[in-house]
Each structure stands twice: as structure tokens, then as C-alpha cells.
Length: 290
Image (cartoon, rainbow, N blue to C red):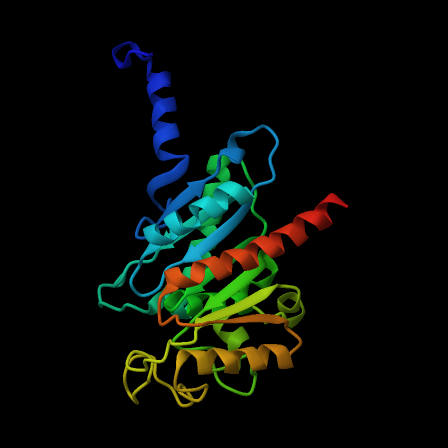
């Protein structure tokens, strides 16, 4: 047994790395913008000279349960050789108490899609990996983020799971952003690439008992209200089914999972999401081997 009193600085650093940088890690501030943070699950496979490690990103909802999602995906990461990245986008980054800015990708001068992509580059640099594509899951407010991120960066996704969003952006160029896609290029400076989205395996997942509407019914003049904000339906299942219809009408295949006896609880959806990601990952790796 080693004696900590006789450890060299190198020994101590190695012990610290093993404790804080692998497995379920500590929380890191983003190097490009330390207002934002993230935690990771780093699988043992990443330490092998040759490995086949993929990246899964789990985006929190309004409750910011990013540690909980890291823990919920840890076993999946271990057995499927996946690193798991769970960002934290805090409430009120601009000092205004706004809980929802990240859900629409842009808040003031913050582009949350770029914040996430910077985090992915940072993590890749730290662990000697390049993640050109990744799987993205989010539930509730995180589901809104995934819905809109998939429009903006479909080329970066090997899978997308949209979980129980309270509001949806329909794949409909006849409606103004954020209800639809009209004005997308002017807002983001990038053309919407439907062909790239058609190549992304998409899951939509929601609890069949997720029927409360108090948090998701838009009132005129409040928050991000705009005309048409409530048109997709009254409940989360209704809104997600409307989103599914617009995806499929545009040629985007969707696996729709409506979970029996589940209300608005992201942790209860994790198993279905992991099954979807595992299936997609097996097919992805099989294509790579050929």
C-alpha cells in the first residue's frame, strides 16, 4: 500500500485525475465561458490505447438536474463505451431570473448551441478524442433545446431524443420562429438543412399521463408568447404528436414512445431513451466495421 506522505507531485496528480476526471467526474467550468459548467461520466474504455468511445449529451430541464442525468446514464456509458456530458445552463445568467433562455438557443448575446459545442471541443481536447457527432437527449425544457438544436446542427447528431417539451417548434416554414421555421436563417445565420435532419435517427418520448397544463399554456404578453404558441395542443403528448406529424410529413423518421403510467418525470423516461440510443449505436458501429 502506498504511503501518501511519500507521494511525488506526479503521483498525487495521477490520484486526483483518477478520482475527479474519470468515472463520475467533478463539475467543470467551461473554459470559454465559465458562467456555464458541466459534469461527465468517463468510461474505463477511454483509458485504453485503442477504443471506440462515442459521446452522449443529456440536457437538463428547468430544474437543472444535470447531476441526476449524469448518474442515470453512467451505467449506460460504461457498458456501451460512451462518454456522457451533462451541461449546466444556470437560471438568470443575464441577471434577470430567466429560467428558460437556453431553451430557445439564443438569450441576449449568448448562443447556447455554441456554448455546448465549445464544451464538446474542450472535453475532446482533455481526453484526446474528437467528437464530430454525438447523441443528444433532453426532457421537458431540455426537450425544447433538442428540438431546436436538431434544426440548427443536424449534421452533428448521430441520434436525437426529444422528451416531453412544454413547447415545440414545428417543422413548418409557414409559421414564424419559434412556433415554426420561418425566419430561421435570418435568426441563426445558417440555412436549415432538411436533408441532414432526415439522416438523424429521432426519438420522441413522453409520458401518457403527462397531462398537466399549468406550466405550458402560454398567456398573451407573458414570457415567450407569440401568436400560435398554443396551437400544437393543450398537453405535452398532444404537442409532441403534432411535432411528430410535421417531422414525418417532411420525410424525417421518428420513433414515438408514449410511456404508460408516466407523468412529467424525466428519470422515468431514461430507460426508453437508453434503449433507443443503444439500438442506434449498434447500427452505427456495425456500419463502421464493414
